[in-house]
Amino acid sequence: MNYVLAKVKVKNEEGFRKLYTGEAIFEDLNGLSGANEYIPSTILEEDEWFKLSAFSTKEYCLDFLCTKFNSTEYQEIDKTHTDIIEYICSYQSGKYYFQRILKHSIFKQKRITLGDNVCLDKGEKSIVINDCPDAMYDKNHDTLYFRKLQTVAPIFKGIDILYKEATKEETESFLQNDFIETIDGYGVDRIKTMNRKRIAMAMETLKNFNKKQRKDVLDYTHEYYPHLQYKDSTFSVGTEDDMKFLLWGIEQRYYTTPVTKEQRVANSVIPLTI
Figure 1: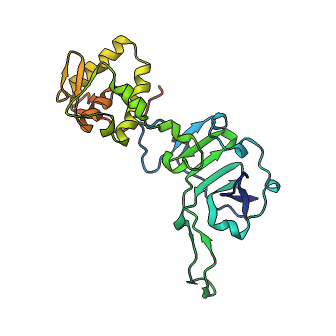
Figure 2: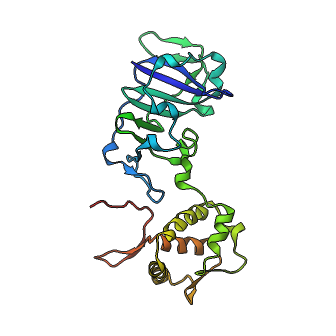
Figure 3: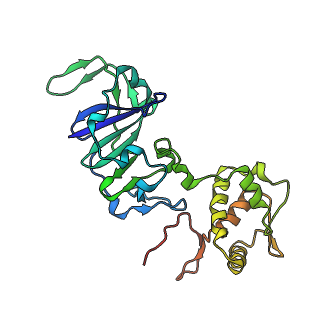
């Protein structure tokens, strides 16, 4: 049997209600065998998925995913709760399919149904089920699959730490590095979201570098992007583009094709396991 739970906004309660019992509302997902372990620097193709292995050990895993599913633990949903559904979870043969419920996901509208018996549907309130869920948790393999971190973040609270934005204090600390000199009034207040996210990744990268590796990555950045002023082992950064090109260098995004010797920058990175 398949069950659909609705997460509703209820104070001082876990907030799950039984919404539907019957046939499966989502089909099995394709492309999971080639899913990529999540890293922020990877951009997926249209039919690809991210995955998080050992998901039950993560602090942002939902409590009910760590126990055996028991439908009797959940009350039937009350009509007064249908306007405060945050997301639904469909339990299907040991797999949990998640879909966020946004304002446009619930509608009530008159329509003529075109079936064996054409009739007027006066518009019972309905939830639109997407062709593809926002996330799926496979309990047998303890793995969460998803495509967009920002989409599942409201479901799995705290998961966005995987692609965090550097705080103002962290950004200020990064700018204090001896290889950066800000010019033309550029500073913390001018650094926008995308570069703050890149800074957060760069800080983690630099933590793992020794002194020689740190120097090598700066020389490498200058070699590939000489337009960025570099003198006495210090880059002069005066614009958002300057900062972006520097951060790309720290993440070693620049490369040369082996045959045509064309210099490029990698928009997405997937570590290879050989």
